[in-house]
Image (cartoon, rainbow, N blue to C red):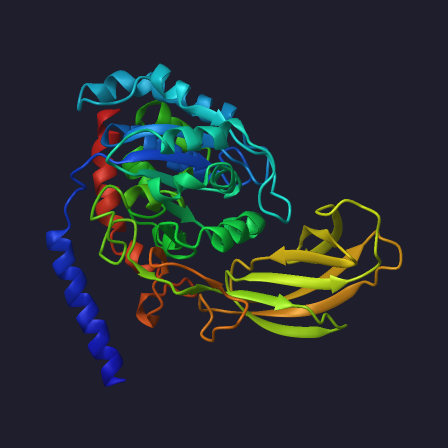
Length: 428
């Protein structure tokens, strides 16, 4: 107990010091955003509004619509730019460097609709081609690819142009998004383990509003700061009734305050630890009523034997029903079938695997999802990652409830919201 208190005090001292020394990023980062805006979670709209109000701090090179789930499209990004256009003059009156609405429109590209097949990639898209084009530009600065949704277009870009691996830095808001793009994640981590990659599965949750707190930094923030702030402020009320979620914004905060090249240091967007492995669990002896314990955010693969079918490899022919949702499984040839899943939170989950393939036996089981990522015990099936793969810090005192590392973002929340309030005032 004394040791734990000592660690907490040490951490408190460290963050107090960091609060005095944390400085704005000095070099304008090159930034490309990949977003599933317009899909099922409207917090991307909140994050897009914030980005547009701060775009003069970045060399913005791309806005890619990449909805692995839902009806998101580039049209929703363009709609947000129309709102920005109404506020543009007032923003420019306070600081230089804001991109014109027309300049922003030229950066908007459509990526893949829907999840990738088992191999993790499919066909090139306007969005994936744009990632390649931006990454290959001659520059002494890397391209920061901030992924607010699925990884499908990033995986496609890496598949089509492996040479861009050394030219980009990736900050991904994972967690639930890992569930949607598990096949693309598996492709990237298996084939590009040396990619510079921040995998934020839970730390971002430190920024999400506490709905039980009505003060000006939580449910009261809209009335205290956003209401009356131009077209973007008026539109903000349409998402979660104006309550700030902005779960994707920590990727942007990361580039605003701190040293982006050092993920282990303090920043507005969190502090991360290097990984040696990414947890992967292969369940290849699927029995009725089987029960397995798996780490949260791990890649779980069910390998099943069934009829040898005369159908193309990578054909979707299985269905995994788990946690109220359905996930496609694929034929791999020679009677082998695989379906992947990535649990988004600690839980106990019943599942059932079925198929329309004749004589394919239905399988039921249970996954017990443990709260630490990656898993405490390594397995031979884990993915090896290189020295630049980072993720949520594992210290117990940095959890916020079940959310690993969330305190590394939560501690900056008031400072971030105060900074934003200044810009919101420009629009009133």
